[in-house]
Structure formats: C-alpha cells, structure tokens
Image 1 (cartoon, rainbow, N blue to C red):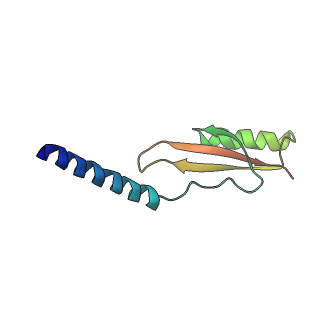
Image 2: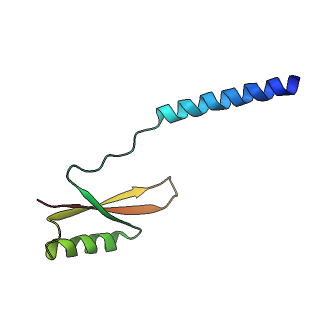
Image 3: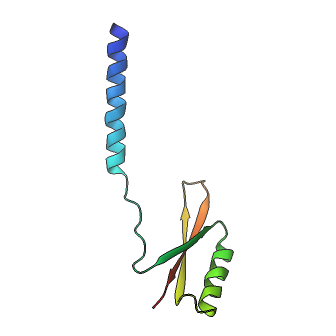
Length: 85
C-alpha cells in the first residue's frame, strides 16, 4: 500500500512540473505578415536560389529565407517565405 501512495505522489509531481514547463515555454513564431510559406529546406543556398528564381520569373515580389536551428547541436532548416505585392 505504501508503494502505491509513493507512486501516486511522484506521478502528481511529474504532471505538475510538466505543466509548469509547458506554461513557461515561448510561443511559436508567427508567420510574417502577408507571407506564404513555400517550402522548408536543409540547404540555405538552395533556399535563396529558389526564392530568387521565383522573383525573376514573377511568381512573387520578394522572398525571405528564415534559418531556424533546433537545439544547440540540432539540425538547421531554412523556411522560404514569399511575398506578393
């Protein structure tokens, strides 16, 4: 019986701490105003060349390649945002 009470207490503490971590997390970045996400790439040079090609062919007015790295040693991705005005 004593083991069940201990397990219940540990579970309650874990849930409470999980809620605090979730509340303290930063919100996800919002989409740029008026932007359209065209793709996610692992190579920044490809992202820029594809964005530039879209400008030259008239698909969009300008573009922005946003670099996001997940964790200190995690992968880095490039988000191609396009804008048409």
